[in-house]
Length: 287
Length: 235
Ligand SMILES: Nc1ncnc2c1ncn2[C@@H]1O[C@H](COP(=O)(O)OP(=O)(O)OP(=O)(O)O)[C@@H](O)[C@H]1O
Ligand SMILES: [Mg+2]
Image (cartoon, rainbow over all chains, first blue to last red; front, side, top):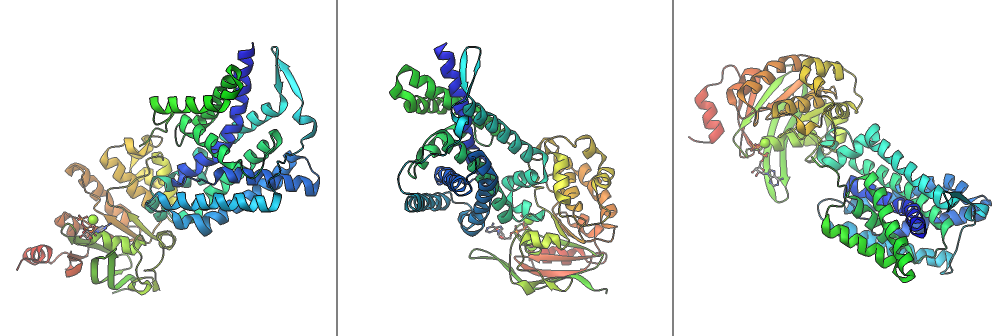
């Protein structure tokens, strides 16, 4: 029963990792941009949530209504003003620029919020639990998982059922020909980054309710997100959710064997999958 | 001659340090079908890229309806009513056949072309509408590429070697459909390796040789030997 519990808790944790990963997966899929600052943007989302809850005195989940559009606007402006300039052929410039962005973000957060760990207060939501078949499941992890599934489903729907998603896919396929269709790729990329950071804002707030955070934790979240994306297969959104769940389960089961093994077990499973399936478990069927 | 829809003067185009076009002058009248011929590497594709905005040059080098569009981006040129059927078809592999067509029409220009009209022109595409575009035969892919350009209801349509890599019988079908396409008052520029095909569907032609116009005139009366001289540059 303890093992079943570990697997179930790991699955729910995987929802959070899928939220970390979704934005990463989305922008890589649309514009082949690897965003090194993604983890710090998750943390930025958490801090914006903290500020909004503190200033307006509202519940952290309500803060989503403000933080998600804020982050989306930041994403669009960032893409149009800086990141678009780095795209085109070489993979190195966007890596360097987003790395620089990561350093800047961390230091800015440190300056504004100090290095003290912070946490958002979600009241009774944090401790509430339901018991299912002898297992006690936290309402917050359940909610996080449900949100992750909803976010992935919404992204999937956007990609495959809307004009915007069609434009994303076309631009990802062939930027020149997409321009011929009247699509300005700089604008399309801006919209993709806006969507990605909107999702990242959700990830940040769910993180900030679940655990305490400080400006330095972005790197770790980036790694979890990366691992989830790679395990699931690049460009496959449901695969990203599966990747998050596998990573989460590996960590909780590892921790069950020996509490010190939590992170190591996750990384080992990631490496093992990478060794056996270099393209991840569910790579997008291409061409 | 009626007012030109397209007026190209002194067009120079570069790929980095390499110059591909040297002072090309060219005019397309409203409703006219023009053929562009020339050997491999003569600069035909570069000319169409320069018109459609994929290659950006000085604004005044390409005038469309009196406006200098030479420096505009491809999406801005497309919105003004210029569509390109690119060399090698270049469909979007992640989009279905129908989505490839729809995205061509997303630009929102009014006109005779719609999904139904394209399906009427190429009925086979309606049967294949839900398929991945890359699963089609070469000829069917070319139909999608043509349909995708038509969906934008362009006033000027540019065809780059639509017969490239297709079986002769398919080429015949596509050229048979061409008058129905261009007949709607559109102007067209047709780049083609097959000289007699190109001359038969056009009223005038331009021959490019190493980035320069080596000959131009009416398609019906041009002498064969003049063309081979202009084409290969042999004296
Ligand atoms: N992307 C590029 N970079 C550098 N040079 C190029 C590029 N594209 C074309 N060229 C050069 O420009 C010249 C004109 O090429 P272009 O493609 O316009 O010729 P073309 O007439 O369309 O030939 P083809 O019949 O083979 O399609 C050629 O010498 C070609 O090598
Ligand atoms: Mg060519």
